[in-house]
Image (cartoon, rainbow, N blue to C red):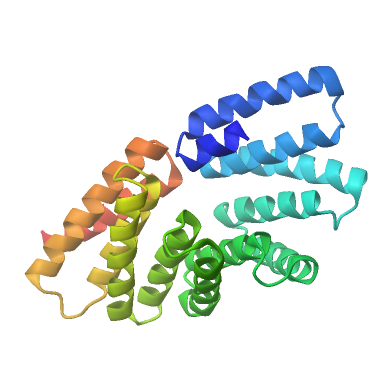
Length: 267
């Protein structure tokens, strides 16, 4: 859909506006409880997650999931897709146990229905690995993200945006679980590929810079050159995430806090 294409291009506000307009039109012609209406609601909920509006996303996705389960049943692919998006929203809101339970259950069901290397399966592996990273469980996330990145590379190619995104998160997990040298090598290569194929202004580039800064800072004892590199990476990541996601976006605020802590250690 056009909205999906806009989100992939990091045009999040335009994607949200397009989906809201489409949803209003569908409700006017199809009614409130039509499958197409539910699908648009689910896509809008996923876009709100990307926009950092996690509470709004949770409310909309819970409403959508209830409708889809009544229309199709709990195991219908559309309902599973919506529940996966809801799991991501819950994780971002800090409801980690409930988010993990949902994502694990949906992942196993999707594996049974679609296979290990289906895009839906790999997307859920990425979401679960990202949840584990967000909550500091890097050692658990690392093998999951490694398998996900390898499968995406085989299916989509080494420089597909999804592959690069999984490699970036894997680098974060590796640094957090003690392999900071391997993480730096992986993240430098990933960042170079993202700059070549996504451009310098995409949020994925700024996330990779943030993760690379963490891997640089994990190398002890720190040298002055490493401290300077990390400062530049975090400053770029913070500025870029504020510009592309908005200064009030939770991910931009996290990057700003990391930069502030790092600067305090250099004072």
